[in-house]
Length: 216
Image 1 (cartoon, rainbow, N blue to C red):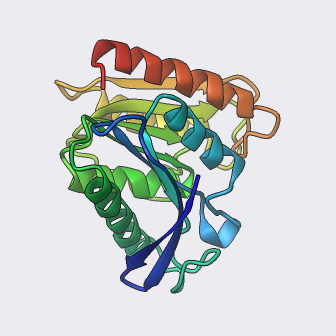
Image 2 (tube, rainbow, N blue to C red; image 1 turned 90 degrees about the horizontal axis):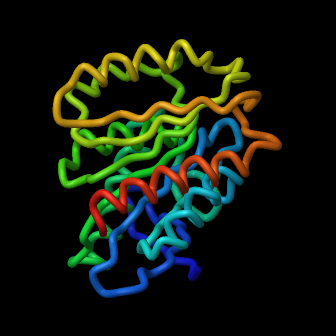
């Protein structure tokens, strides 16, 4: 898990990168929670997502967005953070030009940025969105959503009530050609304390199902 430094629009971007197990390995980009709420690439949910993809042979990158850790710059209300995500994905693709699949996974604010990135990168094959803040940000840009994926949320989330996520999911499920999985973990809060194992289990099962349907 070597540390990597990427050149970004606001200076260096600090990341952790695990190369794939073969030259044409699939790739996965992991996005962390809100920087202004203490979010960083070593958040337990972000690390769990990272490890799930690494375990399955993906070339996997997680990174600190601008102003976090060793990454330069300042918080930019999502605009600069989306640019950082695009830079990170560009770097990941350049390292793995023969990648068979491209995945984006994010938690909380990272899920919001990840879904925006998804709209700009039609080559994306799948996504994982954990606790997407659909009551704080407008997710109507997902029209149409270009890839199938998983939304994972907790029933005890008082920051983003499940009904708010269900509105987004129900809208996306009207589209043809994509499949949106929506899973609720009983008792899990927005921060997944004591429920990290549920993230590992549910996301792991989803990835295994997708990779069985379409091997990477």
